[in-house]
Length: 299
Image 1 (tube, rainbow, N blue to C red):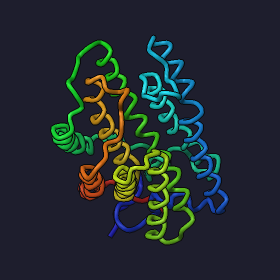
Image 2 (cartoon, rainbow, N blue to C red):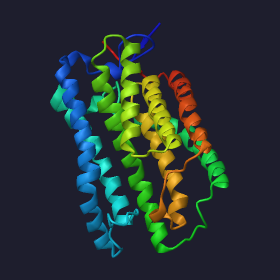
Image 3 (cartoon, one colour):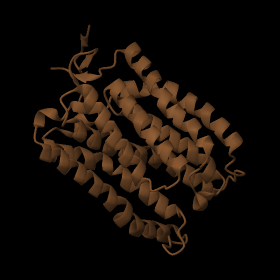
Image 4 (cartoon, rainbow, N blue to C red):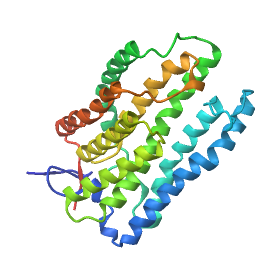
């Protein structure tokens, strides 16, 4: 049985989010969209971020990023957040230009970002991640917090820009890339499996870590957020989880003044957040069913 709403369908009918671009046809469209996504990420991280970071460091009066002695400066960090956030409109415009599908359809099967659904999810996601990260930092301390004007300013910037940075990655990888690959498969299961594998591997690769534990975590995160998107018919859950995770993980580091030595944690302990990312999608599915969230496009 399925229920049709003004925004889409819940149940077994309709077009799943991952296949929302299939009607446009033409394999070249998928190739072009994925190529554009990769190019946008490369231009953002490797071309635009260093000079913008130096500019922001100069405006703030801090030591600029030095490629010969790499460390994360406040300007480089903020530049990365702002530029990755710009991938939200870029992804929507690429979808529109290549597939002829308006940017709103990249957010969800309802044709836009569902703020009510996002708010309901937040009531569950935020407490769960607060508990998880409290335990995480009890075992892996970030350092002694120092409440200065500088650290508090960085925290304020993090609360605004880190969720946007995380959303930019979701719109690019779980949105544009995954839907572009999923459009090439007629069967829903095949479309989801192949596109999830492709986007998760690409997501892990662009994070640039050669550590197997970190790679495993990034792969698990990619798969988990693809599952959240499938179970809810849109990017809201993945955007929320990614943003809350990154923001709450970073705040203690910023308060400890440890931004310059920011590094990926390694070792078997990474299996814990990886497992959380793979299990939590089923909570998202339960909530989507409870609230009657549309998971497919009507038609």
